[in-house]
Image (cartoon, rainbow, N blue to C red; front, side, top):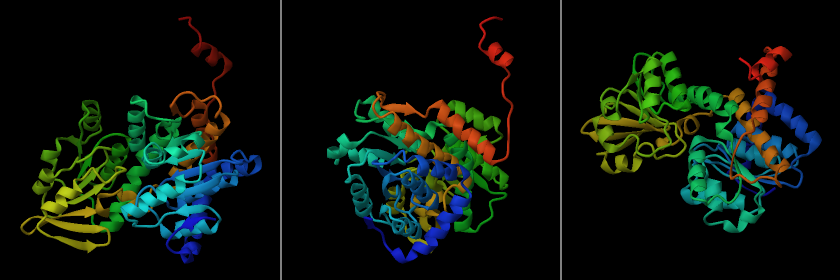
Length: 415
């Protein structure tokens, strides 16, 4: 075991968390059994940078059960849970991570993970892939391919592929139906409000919730805000998504206008400075801001810190900034990913599906390592379907099957 963690004495608490996840992840339990029997990752080294909490830890143990040598770190300085990292290290995996790491420490942990000639890269946001293509190019010859977990990472990969800079194949896990339709919508929707509610202990009902971005994550956040009794306002740059939000029953307006009335602001766009200083100066006293996008760039935190008249640590994960004399706005989790910086992330049953896609995608890379030519690879439809059928079975649900006549009808060219 090679590790750099903060406190191994926390391992027992982390082990209990991981065990709870395992009990609620039937898909990963099934894959763990398959992998332990078949050993498909024997001799394979996997570098993983994903938010290091209990669900991620169980994914790592599932891959290790299949013979993989795991090298693990987090993908955000505030999302690592020290007890989980300790438990994972104590179980024999190589772990480099701790909560609230400095930028220097976070970068060192990424480098440590990549310094072991890894064959498969499992990334969340693109930091491992970015480092491999910049300061650690000597490790590129060892890489078979990788898997990207989130929308932000896919955006970075598409830019690299378009510029002919991507050196190895990457499976776009986020784009799988069994990932984004459930993780991004239901997972983000619930976990964002879990993080907000446990951190603020304030009522949502009757307040104005401004959701910036109406992709699948934004849809989930808006849906759950409505269920909590909020009046939802959506801001968008895409006219089609704006129409969707309107027809879903939400108000649609520019951020300049929404800034005047919002009580809660949640950014979930993957872009930078979605809420800028001019917006923040207009906000009402007591407005609460948070970010549900991967990187801490959606709220202009540098501009806010520089321009604020004063600041106050109001309570854990809440900092107040005085934007006008006597008028404060409050930022949760330093503008980092609120569902993980201020909560436990997505529910276990949701991540069971997402991480089943990850595990099966890693298996696909190993099984097809000699025939991969495309740099960006969609998750194969048969993988999506297999995971969906397993999920249905775990829920005790069944569906219809086409008859031979129906199959013939659907594939016939006759009218």
